[in-house]
Length: 307
Image (tube, rainbow, N blue to C red):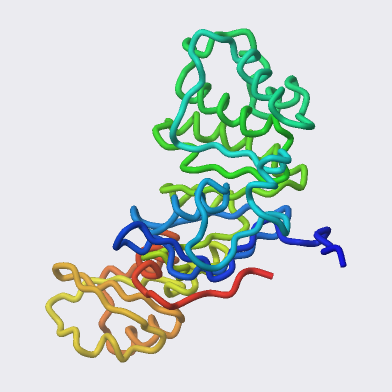
């Protein structure tokens, strides 16, 4: 019986492992990316992001477990033009024009996107006749994005796509990416910029030591790290009782200021008020940065993906 792949997810990792010598880069990860999702991979250096991308693109194979794209082998999806990639390495030949290099790549795919459409999606229409050597860093990055798109892929994989770009160029790039995603396509990107993951991803997957330690929306990750931060001056008072306050999940003291992570800031503040222990009180929501620092050290803990 022929396998029906119509509803297969865009990406599926099943207990995938990968080792390089004595280093275990991936330690049995399970990951599903549905069609049409935009998913961010976060992790410290060495967490397993690059290994995940390599297996996903068929550049390497897992030692055990399985990796599938659209229900089949990654190499098949790549050869069929269903996947586009924008990796950190490599750059276009500088003497050719933007249109020439994108056109050349288009001819290598079985059913490419019209070159003018790829240039428009990447925000390059006005630079089509400019030589690559004369482009700014942000413009050159958009050329790489157009190259990833011109095969007309259903999935695009972006490895640190805005590294070394200034704030304006990063914003322009994400506007271009949004144009592609709005067509119902799938995007998976790795980044060191936490605010990008929070702003542009439907889901955020946190890798640590080759394992997925969190998988959910930005809001879910923030709640998992403790929904709010309550900070105040101790004014020389002791700290032993802080951990017993309602809602408090962790306590940090810097100089004479306490910083409490809490799941119920209202209850925490009321308890502080009852003890007349509030000096220079400040209540803020946990940021994605707080969540990342917390979750990337909680190996084995995992959030359920957003439904």
